[in-house]
Length: 254
Image (cartoon, rainbow, N blue to C red):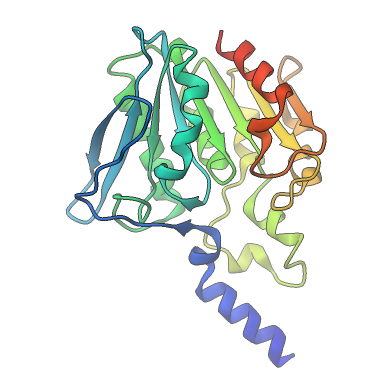
């Protein structure tokens, strides 16, 4: 009983570090990405500044991808995926959450939704809704889905999503009242039915972090014209290596 309480207290106290494994870098750092890019900041207040990397296609952009990354590292790790979109003619914006990379501020669930909305509003200064693709990877899928539920877009693409954070963690911490313990719920299942744009989900059957069955629960919430793409043998961080995902992604971006 003492061990149960101790583990619960530790998880409750350090849940942000468990869920968001950020890597910060100095604000005067310079990225050396192979894909051409521009850098821009959103300044919310004196404590909150969000870094945006805007990867550029070779030719005039035909649209934009708003990319919400996973829970580890920072944009420096996810930049490797930008060519998936820039080579298809899409400008690709990646934003670091508070505490990631050069971004600063307090990391809250409402704050994550707000930064996504501000990124969308910035994109709307250049693009129409039918030119905007919202893309979420891992923990970013809940953020992406919430945004797509309140703003129009060309399509929503989710890579390794979860039903909700409590349901995802239930697989590991089933003995705790996670809905009460967690500050971060990110209920993808609550937002997905409100998305009017086409939705495509990619998930691997061997995902070691977000159980395939947890993501599969989202399938019943999809519209008849939406797609749930199962990658047989796919793990959490290697779906990009599978031809099925690459071919499907190219078709979606045409």
